[in-house]
Image (tube, rainbow, N blue to C red; front, side):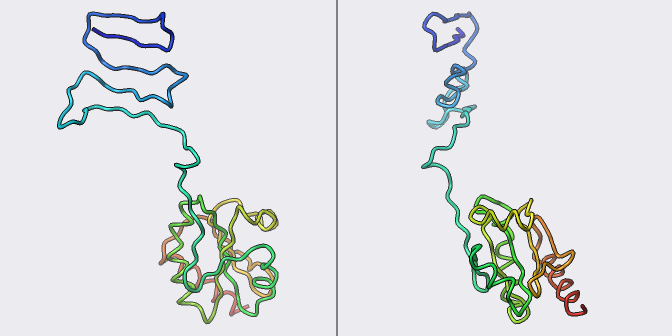
Length: 183
């Protein structure tokens, strides 16, 4: 017999058909699980079990932080002038965010570039959420964003947005360094 349950005590419908599923009321869709009840349990587990999505609570939201390896340094707005604009060497700036998956994806490649090009180039990270003035000033619309600075100025056509493989990142840095050494 099929039974439809509702949060309202007055709404119970009975049918001669075998049970198909139990559905929670729409107002409690995130607090209850809908289960297919027509199949028996196997080894203690119910087959065809459907778990509805639940909203994140503050204790269940994953916490990430910006981690910098050897050669890569995280800077803030207050350090941007002295570290990037007044640097004697070219500086590759990576704008990232803790919640950005592609940012975490290219992080090892950025650390590798920082170590490999340490004598020619400085690599820094800037947290998108903690530095809104820099984000606005340099019009960072996508993450991660890479911008090369030399002599206090953004190098023309050096801006790159989105994830990139290590090989393409190396080719990108090589072409930028060649461009600024010719100029």
